Amino acid sequence: MPLHKKTFSELTPDELYDLLRVRSQVFVVEQDCVYQDLDMDDKKAIHVWLTEDDKILALARICPAGTHMDNISIGRVISTERGKGYGKQIMVYAIETAAEDLHADIIDIEAQEYAKGFYEKVAFSQSSGRFILDGIPHVRMTWRHPDVMMTERILLRRWHEYDAPSLFRYASDPDVGPRAGWQAHQSIEESREIIRSVFANDTTWAVILRETNEPVGCMGYFTHATSNIPIGENDCEVGYWIGKPHWNKGICTEALRLMIDYCNNVKHFDNIWSDYFTGNPASGRVMEKCGFHDTGRLNRCSHLLGGDKEMVRVMRWTASDKDK
Image (tube, rainbow, N blue to C red):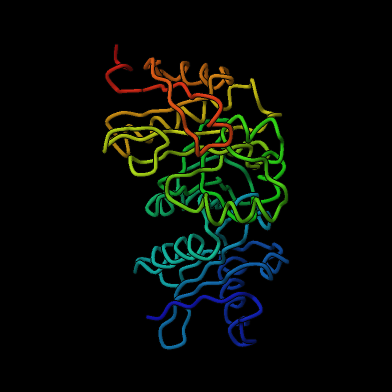
């Protein structure tokens, strides 16, 4: 049974008609619900469907962030033959499409309340209270990539090229970059290139303020092979920065605690190291709040901006220290 994926402009008239006919049959006729199914979101969405002998067995659409919901979202989910696994198959394909084509870290869905159990089977979890939409009880449900970490206030997710304007807004501040050992960004295009060439890996996250859905800083770790300081083969070195308007608000501490938890409980590193320029004691206080201890070592990192003139103080976190 073939799976299909097309943007709105790629759909043929017959394909569009068939998709809309099935949606009308289920959402309007079968559910006896008069609502505006044909919205402008279809034009921006990726449409996916499953067929057999040209008959549509299941369908869904994936909307980019800021289209139907703040985050990337999946909607208009239909299985025309229940109990045969077609619904789960189209949802898995929709999630894969969102991840591959839109680089989704988080996906939201407005689920009819009775279908909550179905979406839980494809790793969605309820993220809102009950609400009424078009006369039908719904709940918001959210899927998160396994590497996404969050608190009530922030989340850590991968960087995307569309983050470049926000990155430039904070990374162009001369009070931010040099404190962490790098030159302030000079343009949005430079920030975009940094995302492509430096941040595009499995060890770097954007720090997102959930209230605004905006990147306000960066968090990540270096392995033994890439660390700025001598560390063990199964150790890592954590590095981070937060935009100046968000200093002294506890955001950096929250983000670092998430990173420590990930490095300890997911990656299982033996030791977690970090360091800060001696002229930036505020960064050291963040580390101390998160359980790092001063090793007494000073190190020169000449490859960092300012590293040939100022020493860094080396800090270490271990699980055994946490339990003391």
